[in-house]
Structure formats: C-alpha cells, structure tokens
Length: 510
Image (cartoon, one colour):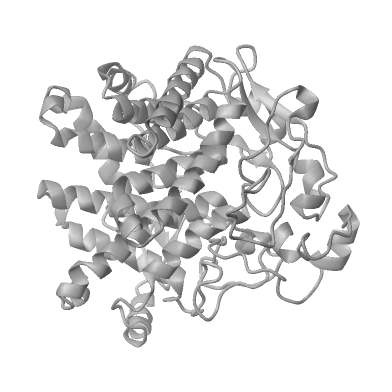
C-alpha cells in the first residue's frame, strides 16, 4: 500500500498544538525509565522472587511443562492474557538487551541498571530451560483459544497449559533464530557482570542458530495453535540473518558475518525495503546494524554488500522521517507514526529506538543520513525520535500518556486480566472463567491495579483513543511495546542529565 503524507491542512493545527505544549524537556524520562522496567515484573510467570516490587502479583504457572516432562516454569506473559508465546518473548529480550548494550551507562546513572539486567535474565533463564536439547526448543505454553474464553488472574488459571515445541521434524526457524538473537545479545550484556552466564547464553545461541538454519521451516506451520496470534508473515529468512548478525556482534567470528553477506540477496536482506520493524519483521533492524559495520576498517572489503544493506536501512529511516519520496510511514494529525490500527504503538516504540541508535551512529561517525539527496543530521533524527516519545508521554491531542502510570492522565481500563481483577494476595477466593468476565471484565470502573510502565496499543489514525477494557485494539499492552522504550528513555535521561544541565540552550535546538 502506498504511504503518503498527511493532508496539508493538518500542519497549521499541528503547529498551534505544539505551541501550547512546550517542546522543551517537560517530561521526566527518569520516571518513564523506572516505570517501563517495573512493567516486566508485572508480566512475570513462575515463582516470583523475594525482591518482586509489583506486590499485587503472586506465583503462577508453577506446573508449566509438567505434562510434557519438562520444566517450563518462568518467562513472561506477552500481553493481557496468560499464554507464553516464544517468538514475541524472545524479541522482547533482544530489544531489552540492545537497549542495555547501547545505553546501559545511562541506566546505571539512573539507578536502573540492575532492574534492566533482571528483566533480561528473567527471559533468558526461561529460554535456557526451554532449550532442552540442541535441536529442541519449547516455544509456547498455553493455548490462545481456550485462554481467551476465560478472564482469570494468572494465579487462578484453569485453562490448558499444554506446551509446544519445535524440533528436527517440526522446524521453526523464526523462533529458533529470534531466541538465538536474544541469547546472543544478552550474552554481550552479561559479559562483564556474569561471564559464566554470558558463555552459557552464547553456547545456547550458537546451537539454536545452527538448529534453525539446518532444519528450515516456518514455525507457525509446526505449531499451528500460534497461527491466530503470532503468525510469521515475513517468513524465517529475516530471523536467520538477524540471529547471525547478533552472533557476529557477540563473538566477532567472521563466519557469522559471512552468513549475513552470502545470504543477503537470497534471504531478502538487501532486496526488501521495509517501513516497519516488529516482533515479526526484522529486516529494518538487521539492515541498520549491518550498515553500521561499514564504519569499521576491517569491513571495508565487504563494502559493496554492506552498502546495499545501507540503502535499505536508509529507506526505513527516511520513511519514518517523511523524506522518502512519497513512500513514507503515515502520521496522525498529531504527528504520531501510524502503521496499522491494531497495537500501532509497537511500531512507534521500535522506530523511536532505531532512529535513536542511528542518530548516535551518525554523530560518532560524523556523517549524515542521505534521503534521496537530502542530508539529515543526527540532531534532526534524534529530535524526531524524541517527538514520538513525547507524544507517548502526553504531548498529543488527547493530553493522554499512553505509558500507563506516567503523568496525570493515562489509560485506567487496560485490557489485562491480572490488573483488572482483585489481587490474589488480597483475595485468594477462586475466580472462574465466566465469573471473571461477569464480575471484573464488565465493570465500568478503573482497574484495581495500575499496570505501571505498560505501553498500550494507542490512538487511532485521527489521534482518538477510547479507554475501555473491551477495546483491546487500543487498550491492550505488550512486552514488546515497552521493551524498545527502555533504551530510548535511558538515552533521553542521559542527555537531559549531562548535556542539558551544562547547556540548557541545547533543548531549543532539538
């Protein structure tokens, strides 16, 4: 579908709107960072640790994997339901890890570095359990269909907890590749603080990549129950390239880079020009990382292929910036990137992260982004990324923060089983399937618990948002929505606390 700029009559209204809301550093990025990391504790499955800060949650899913004779206790619930989906969970961990790799120093200065590592490790500990043999990975616990018939706290679950795996005869290269990427990225994170654990993650990542590459196949064909929830539309080639690239970053082993180069054409790495980046479609992310390798002298020999990766990375970045000769990502009248109706904020948070990382790359390389002959500097790119984050935090026509728990106005009826029902710790009385729907889902009141740090699906194409538990297209939140924001919040906090404190005039230049 051809993307086009919003109609011209939107811009005068937009300029008036932003004249009312100051573009200066009016948002508390430190608080946003803290909130975003707290959200992952809400989504924990398994036996909760003693230092659990979200106190209205309790242990859940303690028999996961028991019927199949494997320990699958732990991991994350992906959204407002109680299923553990492997592909989006792995992407969540990859993006959390990438954020720490890029901006861990700012997280440390904010006092949040330990929480970030805990959020990553809760996922990777589960992946280690789920990878029971070199060519076996358990990729889902629970069934979406039966789960959606019930509105129950995770502590009360009576729905199916059947576990599903991929293996040599039932391959799933997407989820094997993404889990390999997550563990490779996390191995970089833990390299100094926990070197033994880092090596363990790397060992699993290498095995999983080899498994996914040797036994190629779409995972939603092998695990049919996932096809209604997280089907792989883009196929598995992008995940295999993505995994190889992260393994190259983790090991500096030339064979992984060779894989990315040799399969660049046949796997679509240098042919697909994509204007979204998500748990399913990894091309833009891998193209951006591959293009940044050009900066290293040792990679000059690979310049022809890496420059083709660069060309496709530029397509994505320029499309976000509305400088792509008409083939751009749509925007709402209020200026928010708009990819599609359902859970649009996932694409916004991912775009904000990629733009932020690339602006840093350009600044360090003393380069500019080339959008069809128009040169765009790193400050302009970062400024746009910041505009998306600020929209999320409240600089929008609804004056609504879409990061739950942040600011004076945010969604209070989030589509989320646990937060919309009474805490199990306060009331251990069993809540059944239909009882949950009748007694809690249908209530007109705000949720009993604030889902702090959750990024909901967000407004529609006209910046409108209806705060209603039944409006799951807009009010459901997902781990992979918030994960990319952790890094961006840390970056913006870092800028605010260093550059801005010494030179406040920099704010106006953004």
